[in-house]
Image 1: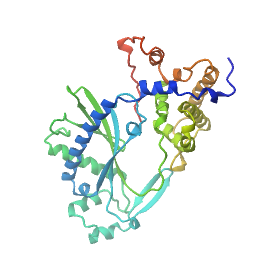
Image 2: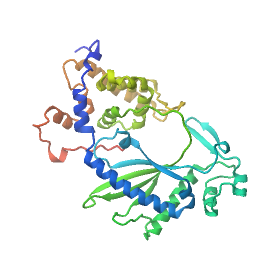
Image 3: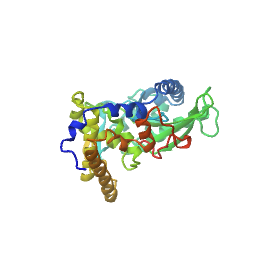
Image 4: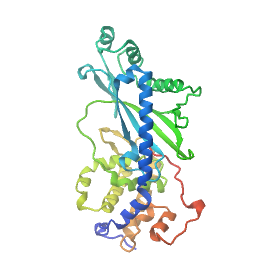
Length: 361
């Protein structure tokens, strides 16, 4: 079967796309509502407790920003994993801060007048807050990232001890003990909830510093089907952020999306992903000198390029006569049967909901 010459005319309809989104990607609204309320109440308690344990945190904490696939609209399935930022606004004036880059995509923050500030008490902080702030500024007046995170970790440990737990867990009334662990730049909080505590949640908390920026990337939540494809095919080397970044770079395509179908956009972004592995490069949205694929080996690059090439050729070859030409790659075989026979197929219970072995990144 030859590939179609003009595939665009077969990418006009969103019927299958919308069925996939509704049946296999879109989250249950009741789950979203219940968990949002649960988490809102929990973090109000946690932030208040952290304020009581740290004068500097009480002075500098601004707000929580929910990030990651769940709040971007690119998460599918039951929400079990969350990402959030604790936004900290240190009490420095803009003129007192220097930003220096020693490698693409990373910056170092320096407060050259820190010694003068600390000796003259010009920030109007209580002595304990000055001591906390000084704990993550090094001898050359740079903010030390690891010590900054240690400061947050120390506050969480104080909260745990204040609640009377000797195992460094956080205990609040009406909540199961919250376990915490450090994972890279984040602190992961894990706890159970529900009528019988049958549901488990992992929340990655990352402390971040706030500064002024002038341009934000466009939203691309409608391309959550790319996250679904990645997990169905078990492509561990492709982080969800890589897919989002591709969409950011093609923002013009999404600005005119009301005149093109989402099926068309999905196929075009699949081509862009193939090109990225062919060129061994996805440029970071904020810094063209940083290649998000630089840590992926050449063999894996060729492997992924070959897989994507196979998928694209198959879609071009079969889409004329098969309305499920794209769906069969996005869904696993059980889901594809459900899509084709929504009211007539019974899936064996032990295989009804295959679990993906990869976490979101």
